[in-house]
Image (cartoon, rainbow, N blue to C red; front, side, top):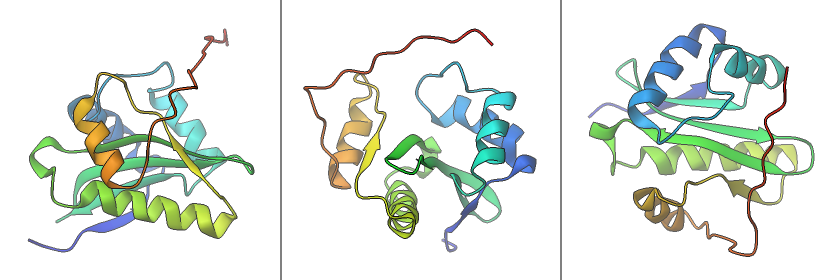
Length: 141
């Protein structure tokens, strides 16, 4: 098996990332489209981390930092590549990014129903905070 390469994703990667998420990510969000991901990359060019092996996309994570908190979204690994350390490598890269930016704690958006992901997040040292719930409101653009 060849070495895993992790890099920041750019505008040229957006279409491939969106297709990848349909296969490897659980669920979608209102901003999971070309415009939403393009805005992310334009605002924070280092936030979208891609894992590649042999030139193929095998994993993603969004490591967003707003100057105060570190947020993790869209940790996804191609189904046939799971349990090979890709998710852990992506999280390590995200955590290194956060530390370099002065971040002190990462928080992750993880679907309640995605129990396979729960095990991966726990293995990486993350734990749920049951006293919090996510509240959302779609904004009209």
